[in-house]
Structure formats: structure tokens, C-alpha cells
Image 1 (cartoon, rainbow, N blue to C red):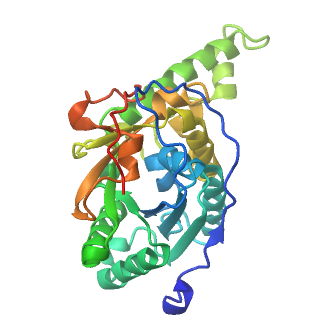
Image 2: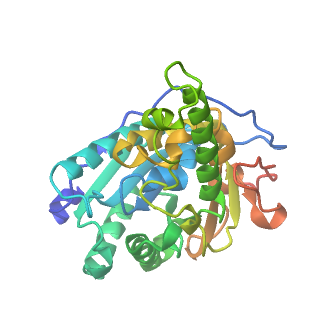
Image 3: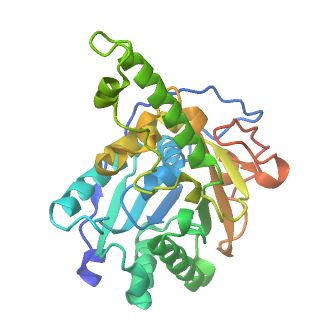
Length: 332
């Protein structure tokens, strides 16, 4: 398949879809969501391991649960600045575990150099994305919006390349959606982590041997609360220039699976504010995802509209807020 045309591609592994999930939130929608989307397909295109989980893990898990053929194209192994070798192997294993947690059926992992995508041959990268679309034949393609979540150069490049690839397919193009993270979403996670950290300090201070000794307590818990999000030091960077989304999808019932996938990326998750998010917290903090329909690609409604609420017909939600689903249009 792809490997013959592009020798730098690695053989995609198959991830067995998970058959159980923790449903943490009862749906508040006024119209029933689809219960069976077998025969539909979705391809997510991202730059690094963990992008898929933080950006749209809830939607990917929900789609897989409904029978959608979900696949992932990841452009790099995420080793930049950490040395190659073992980091590459670690992050590859972590991506495989996260894919299984989300129910992703197939992952194609390219071997492009992390942090260098803007300086690599754009035509070659675009052709590889086009080739993956030809193989997977998705109804929907997901990728970064123009802000790259927080202006990461690799992310912005993948946005541009995926848009160009879909545009180049003309009438054969799938529908294209961009993932956005609204401003304040990751700040809410960081604030939650700070509160949880203070609570742990108080608990540790009250333990025998630590009583009234915050220094000992900090030795057990840490010096200060984490504020970074998967290696991004400023949580306010997320969404600081996010385009206005057109669709909000309440994925609260799959937020615990999204959290589990994030935890699979342990090399990035440990020490992150996300590590303080519990299964109980996940629907509130991670349970609504936002998308923008691209101007290019197939026109007309898709199954994503059946799962979400158009932003134009609903107030822009607070991070983690519950959504009311609009009546679905008929699908062909």
C-alpha cells in the first residue's frame, strides 16, 4: 500500500476498538444522536503523538464507538528537543496505546523530523497526505485550524498541507473540519490543577510527621502546581488566536476515554496540569470539543452535524459546559 510509494512511511498498526467505556455524563440533548454510523469513515491528520488526544480525543472515541472507521495520520514521532533514539520509541509506543484507548482502527506514522515540517518539501508532504486520503477514502478529514492550537509551526504547516491536499482532490474531496480550542479552555485545566495541588498540600500537611510542616508536604507533592499542558508552558497560549468554531460537540460521555488516551502519552502527561484531572472532572474540563467547517472540501451536511450543535444557533459554551443538540438534517 502506501509503504511501496513512500519508503519513509512506517507500517500502520491496527488498534483493536475498545468495547467498553466509562459514561460519566448523561446526555442533555433534546434530539437523539445517531446510534450506528457503520459505513462512515474519518481520517485525523496531526503532527505529533498526543495531538489527536488533546485536540479531538472525545470525538474520535465517540465515532469509533458508533462504528465509524477512524484512522490517524501522524507526521512525526515527536522527538524534537529530547534526543532521538529512546524518545522516538517511547512516543511511538505511547501513540499506539492512545490509539487503542480511543478505538482508532489504523495509524499511519510518518518518519518526518519533529520541529522541521515548515522547512521540508511541501509538495512531498502534501502528496503523502493525499495518498493517505486515497487509501482511507474518508467521509470526513480532521486537522488543526489555522492557529495550530497555539501557533506551533508544525501544527500550522499540517493545517496548510492538509487543506491543500483536500483542495487538490476537487470533486473527490472529503469534507474537511478544523479543530479549535477556545480561549480559556486550558486555563481552566491549569486553575483546576492549582486548586487540586493546594488540596494535596493541605492533606499531606495534616499527615503524621508532616503536621504544620509545608516543606515536608511539598517534598511529597511537589514544589509548585503544574501549569503546563503537554509541554506547553503557558495554558493561555491555547486558543489565543483561535478562529470562531462553527460546531460544538458534547463529548462528555467519552471524556474519561479522552483522559485515558492522554494518560497513555505518559512522557508528556506526567508533570502536566492534565495529570490533576480525574475521571470525575473530565466531562467538565474536557467534555466539549469545537470544530470549524472548512470552505474547501465536500459540501453538504455530514454525520458530525448530527453529533453536535451549530455555534450560530447556540451560545458559545463555557469550557466543559453541556450543549443542547440541534435537530439533525437528513443525510445522504
